[in-house]
Figure 1 (tube, rainbow, N blue to C red):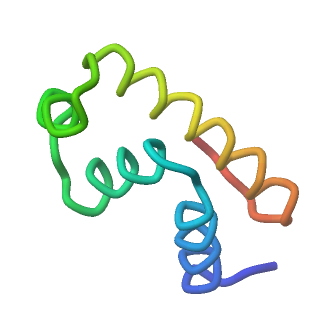
Figure 2: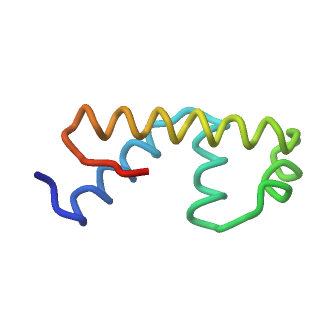
Length: 74
């Protein structure tokens, strides 16, 4: 079982391994705490596209973490 710090490192590595624009969207949303509207404007995308990519990215991260034995409750 991974500790919280190890799980955080794993999430960071998984996000870093994402391809653009998904990595950029995740970094802006969860590290820079930008709104979907601000991310969409900065990346010349629609807010709907940003939200869809966030949703799919979270699902992908959840699956990857589960495969690594990290319990996800969200």
